[in-house]
Length: 54
Image (cartoon, rainbow, N blue to C red; front, side):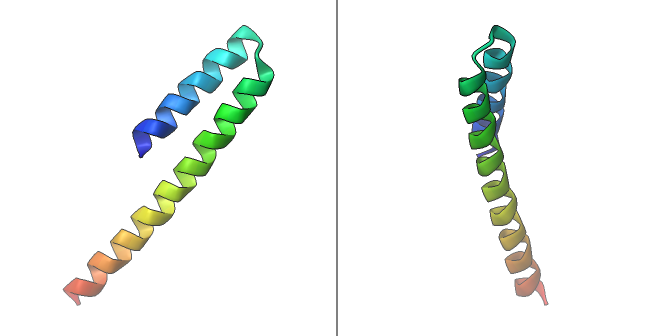
């Protein structure tokens, strides 16, 4: 999932440099949403792992 974040981030940077602000904003927004989903799933996984140990 982090690879998708990096792909959208690179697309946003390239689009921003080339002047396509709408595409850059959309790609950055998608990258941000996917990153937060990844972060939430990681935290849930971490809590579940700690719960199994104890």
